[in-house]
Image (cartoon, rainbow over all chains, first blue to last red; front, side):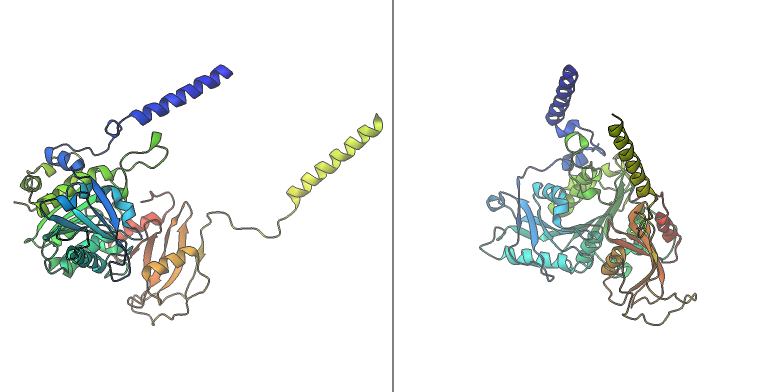
Length: 323
Length: 142
């Protein structure tokens, strides 16, 4: 009996040590990148990152903002593009730290209000104004460090509406938006806490609609009919042809996968595995690098029908009007 | 030792009787089963006609379940009313029913995903029918 107990203990210790020793890359990673652009931006960028929180309210609702940025921002020779982030319903930036730090590692400054109801986009615009004030403040680490000619927005769920609304109401200050799991209009509650059809059809800028195939209830690819925009395809089709636009669904990703952190924890027990957080790193970052940092190679990946995006194995439902 | 044996027999009989009484004794009040479906009319039934109904009053039922409170909080309209709210027994974070608001005073079906804090309202489309299927027990939880 003693010998059996000792054998069991030895096996457990060995398994634990093995799991701890395995690098993350060796563990099962869903939706791994397949092409050079996706692979490049799937990996973290070269910058170490720092996160800071505003000491005072940064939006009109009294919320603080979290800012993710390259640690060595003060010593960089160039100003950095800015991404304004919008949280999903009842969420804070704490739910998205993996994704937001990933962006910062690629040389973006990311400002995220801690507002939990961002659908209207007003607090997202407030966070932009906060960063503009920081940029002009000699005591701020962001003094003369932000390139306000290159500002993008991104958001999740209700925040996807908020990011798009912020862009369309920014008078051109925000150039592009990446929407993660933009809910069908039937989920708008109240209705105007949403991306409304007239706002979209009268807008300008560029937009990348990103959803997951397992999110068919809230952000499905297609719809059966009706006048509301109840699918990613309907949003894409309603987007003016004069805007650069793309749409794709990550295979197997559910509504909240963007909130995940890579890895499943020790032996998969300590935290839930997350699917979409892997696949969402590559092309969405590439889109922002193209639109805000001028990476033409990243932009070419979205070329309609022939770009790398259209052959990536992790994606489906892809369409773009990128020439 | 017959006296000792007799005492053991008596103790045994008493113990059996006590156990039997525990099982036979009716409870003072029967608590609802855990996860039972709760169906409550939070407001008077609406007219079957699809036309607008009178403005909702602010005097909604004060006896609200936590799920009704959460739904009303998400709507953010102090004059909103709910009725026939039913939580899914196997997924109590999902609730379905009917609602009306001051801006849309007709009772319309809704689906509530409590874990995502999301509310879908019936727009008459086939797509809402697809969404409403999530109210049935056994359906996948998004």
